[in-house]
Amino acid sequence: MALSRVTTWTAGQTLSASALNGEFNNILDNALSLISPLTGNLNANGFNVTNLGAGTLGVPGVAFNNDSNSGVTSTAPDVLDFPTGGLRAFQIATALTGGAVNYMLATPAAAATWPTLAAAGSDPNLGMRLQVAGTGWVAARRGRSTGSTFWPTYGFYEEHGRAEVAGVMQIAAGTLDLIAGGRRVLQASAYADATNYLQVVPSAGSAQVTLNAAGGGTNVGLFLDSLGTGSIALGSGDTAEIAVGTAFIPASLGAGPSLGNTPAAHALYRENVVKGWINFKGTTPASIYGNFNVTSLTRTSLGIYNITWDRDFAATPYAVAGACTVNAARGGFVTLSLATPFTAGVTGIEAFYEDGVNRDADTVTLIAIGAQ
Image (cartoon, rainbow, N blue to C red; front, top):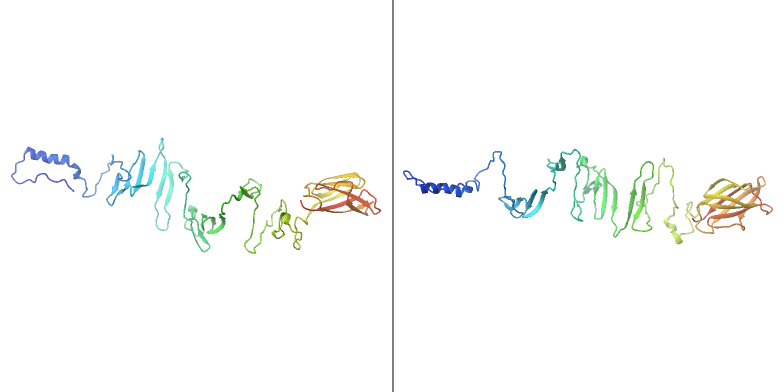
């Protein structure tokens, strides 16, 4: 409202010194009433408004006529607070001594377009940091799905709003879902009190990428299963080989001491696969033609040989079978030797002619089967 009068003058009235002083004193003493409260819009005409009161969270320095405890205040130098309901809702602060050149830029958007919070400033390449307090964490909504199509919580800018979006989301409590092309391609599920997990180790060049079990356990297995009656395929047409470190054992046979003795029809298991073989010349000097899992061959005496296995068998006994030719392709036979050891790592054999006398064999073949 406007400043009130001291005297309402009439025609012919004498202007006295006291009356005139009263008029000026009224302006000096009540000048704020000239502009407060305003009766119209105030135009600063390009000048700055300075020296505002800092205010408090409960009484902001800049407030509004419909809410006296919400607005803008400065609780400390170089700090701007935006309280709502007398409580701090947002704060902008700087601790830089050299001056900030980069900042956050919030950009609104039109309908069907997402608003943007971006890093901006004088540097051409800027990251953005989202930092929690103490042991807190950053949380977001789970995302949503419609049938087999998924919209992840965390996606990529170029794909926002598209049905084939890619990103990460959570469909149900305790899960983490990887989305590509709008479809779930991988899901990690929680397990109560889990200490073991699946580890993927990358590699360089032509080295193998590793997928293995890891965690707090000492001996942790890895379970690979199909859905329903689906099959599991290893490798493709251009796969060079599939290497097995130990053996394939169907669950129906059990494991360890409970391993069954009756294999399924037409199936290969570690118990019925040849673990080593050798084909060698038994005459002096004895030499190996071909072998698998053999470290060395030794002729100890006439017709008696020791075969040292590269990977030892788990224990004795294990099964061996052999045949030989003696005296230029005449038949002979091979037995375990009584004169040399039969251990997990060495098999001693003897070659005989048909008369039952030891002979150096022209050619000996031998296979061995057993647990390793």
